[in-house]
Image (spheres, rainbow, N blue to C red):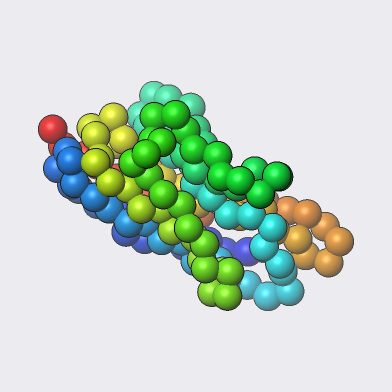
Length: 119
């Protein structure tokens, strides 16, 4: 299984910025897609940003214009630049990877990183 490790979470004031990173490690796999979900207390996990099958990027409406996802394919990493943070962005942020090992397509989650935005 591919292991995903997130970093970069923390406490920030409203209006501030954070950059999350996620590194995929393991052997014998190829990454199809990587992206980010988040889960706030008492709420369902929701997609924050991730690639579509058509090659574009899907962002949650609530983060459009403030968050930017980027990939470093050579390093098997994905980043989430979060600007103009709001208290409602407070959540645990999870990286995911859609990957293939041999002919099998699999999915993996990171352990999550806490983002807390104070007002």
